[in-house]
Image 1 (cartoon, helix red, strand yellow):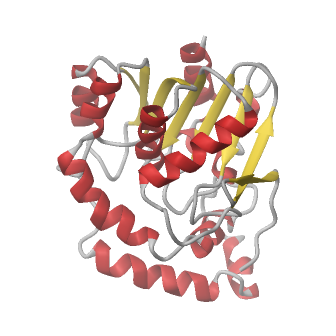
Image 2: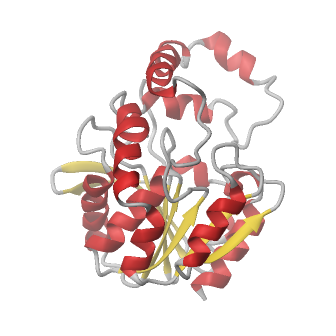
Length: 266
């Protein structure tokens, strides 16, 4: 399935990377999660771009960047370090959602251009995650089905009747899922579980010593909010809870999340 870029395609060490920029001012880099794209921040960006240079990037294996290798957080971070070097930005606030939080922390460990961090909707590890049973097996099967049907006309017609959509295009999340590299399922559900068990994100936050804000949704269906709050607070991160929101609070409460980011960046 072909995608239409809404930004520039940058050559970063021989890789074509989709980058969207809006506004001017102190730089904010927004990183989506698994099966996401730059479009996941369409509702959040207007609340930031009046006073900030908002940079959005499609991660490797996602959106208009594509690719099927180098999908782990460190490899993603190397690509993003190249993006920051190309754009020549300093003291960047990097905000990562879900899997993007892993990438944000890896980027902070590689690039001196990162000045502060925001982790959104992500627990330190999978020790109390509540994923559906059999996810490592079922998700690749579901992804294959989505890739087959996402472009069908009847699917787009049916999407008009979805009860809730957080995107201008009601098929946005389905299309983003369809173009995500199949290998990402293993990276997120298998390799990531092992990696986080060895090096939890709260331990990484403590080791980096950078200013860190964590934004959680009270109704996150994947991770217990109170447990996540306690663990990040224990390592000195500022933690904010968005009431009534789930795993992606910037979709459900973009104004509130934009305010938190503005205050923290200031």
